[in-house]
Image 1 (cartoon, helix red, strand yellow):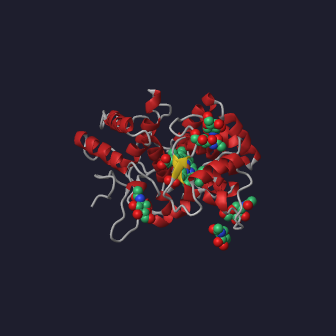
Image 2 (cartoon, helix red, strand yellow; image 1 turned 30 degrees about the vertical axis):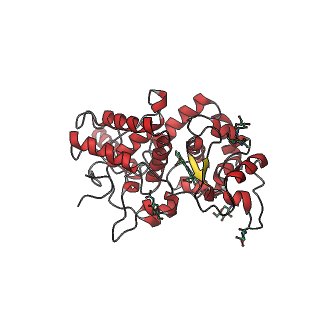
Image 3 (tube, helix red, strand yellow; image 1 turned 90 degrees about the vertical axis):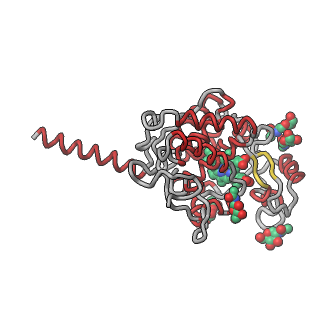
Length: 330
Ligand code: HEM
Ligand SMILES: *[C@@H]1O[C@H](CO)[C@@H](O)[C@H](O)[C@H]1NC(C)=O
Ligand SMILES: *[C@@H]1O[C@H](CO)[C@@H](O)[C@H](O)[C@H]1NC(C)=O
Ligand SMILES: *[C@@H]1O[C@H](CO)[C@@H](O)[C@H](O)[C@H]1NC(C)=O
Ligand SMILES: *[C@@H]1O[C@H](CO)[C@@H](O)[C@H](O)[C@H]1NC(C)=O
Ligand SMILES: *[C@@H]1O[C@H](CO)[C@@H](O)[C@H](O)[C@H]1NC(C)=O
């Protein structure tokens, strides 16, 4: 009898593990720390080296790779699908409108090439991207400020339509953002914390210029936007800027991974409507207030990145290990 109970218990326990790895909502799912320790001992070191060489010459790279990792995870999970190029018969995620200014693909390719030389066919592009995003952002801190679990495998599908469906629009209201994140198993806390990614990087005027010139279609300005900041943005972005000009998302501090994003957000100087929307919900607004504190932000960002990095991951024998990150294996 006891044996039977134990067997059932084990079965239930086991199936729960399997379920969580399929769904991928869990904190890390079936990913592990240093997955390549035995199979490719220097994998993580190589990613770090090549990433750091590139960041040293290009301070904008951390923002590019962080955003690319986010886009990867929100479409079909963190499976490297964002890295795939379009083919004759398929238009890939990469070519969707929200891809504007996605960059750093060459860096991922360079890392992959070096890793392949050392251990061919072992290390996934999805893991390389997750690691490189972390290593680029934390380069300045001389030590990693979040852990990246590994063991992801690469997907074989990348569709423009799925990018359009899953990548949140910068004009989203709070409800919309909450739902977009919920579909990925992320809650409001994750939403507010991960929006802190906007502490680095730049944005094209066309993603927010309606807030300056034509908010409700009557030639008006978004009343929730600080009016001095709006004037400043207008001086940068003409009404018909079709995406040629960029401004810092986190005004004054776009190269520093810090809490200034939350500080200016509270002053109604969040650049996107989707940033400002975080103030329209009481719970989210309270979280914004808490994240101004540096230690709190770093701790929470580390946790939320771990959760984001585990969205719908492919593990075990699912998917493949791509030979080149831009194309599925033939
Ligand atoms: C909450 C929903 C989000 C929306 C609506 C959103 C939207 C956008 C938009 C429109 C841009 C400007 C792109 C351009 O003009 O080139 C941008 C940039 C950026 N986003 Fe987000 N984003 C969101 C969440 C996130 C998350 C979760 C992260 C990472 C954790 C992130 C990281 C970044 C970074 C680093 C940039 C700057 C990229 C660069 O400098 O090229 N975003 N985002
Ligand atoms: C983004 O998509 C456009 C087409 O919509 C394409 O011309 C451009 O090359 C893409 N950008 C990247 C970085 O893939
Ligand atoms: C939020 O936006 C959605 C469309 O994206 C819209 O249907 C909904 O009514 C909006 N909610 C509020 C409270 O404005
Ligand atoms: C403002 O938006 C409305 C409705 O979308 C449009 O008809 C109008 O032409 C726009 N005005 C300007 C100046 O772009
Ligand atoms: C934004 O930053 C620019 C450049 O540092 C500065 O001139 C401007 O005053 C800032 N805008 C606001 C509203 O703080
Ligand atoms: C940017 O810097 C200027 C000058 O130091 C300051 O007046 C302004 O408030 C800053 N802007 C933001 C959004 O913090």
